[in-house]
Image 1 (tube, rainbow over the protein chains, first blue to last red):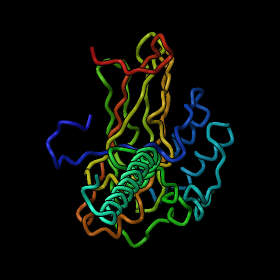
Image 2: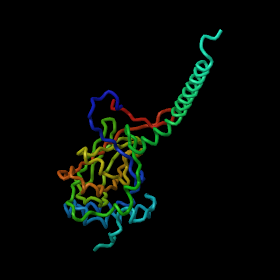
Image 3: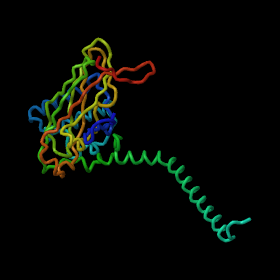
Image 4: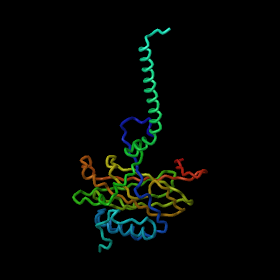
Length: 86
Length: 203
């Protein structure tokens, strides 16, 4: 696939994700957290900084329901985020 | 009858012997190098990512690097979604963009709905633009590269958990990059008679 192209064509190489693929949430068990997070993003014009506690809550929901291998929150970059912000 | 004196003859024998030794040594080295080149090449590819070998270097994801760089500006990550023509799914991003700091982990969602009346397997790949920013886009977990099966009529949320490498803030070439676009494309796949997953071309 990389043979025969003109030289100096910079190509993008997609890399697999570090922790693999998320199992699909077929039953929508964590859908409430998705809704909350998306509403927060809308309210904050997409500013991730204010909504990180909801991302953390969503991932925690996934871990609790067996839709994600349990991982320490600090390994996911949430060491300084508290879940209950309100 | 000897045509040359004895010591010259002896020298010739010695020269031939050493020549033979050298040749044998070269031959052995050549054979050994040929055998060793397979693992050596593999090691070279894995370290340099030559010819598209994925670099699975998990030191990029250590907790110390997952700290938001508070002094940096927020980078807008825009989301794009495409499906191949053969795939009868609606696939859209749930948010237009997310603004993140380098080092700040973020979550984004796509929704996929199987509009057909059959169970379909999809396989996603992604692209990052601008091209030079692609090296800083680190995915912790997503839904790409592995098959995702949706039953007929099923809709499901597909999350992407990623962060922009903190080194992005240090790179002078990235100073003009304010928006990074992440595009996912879903292709249709199915299992053939041998049980291998193959893509279905757009017919």
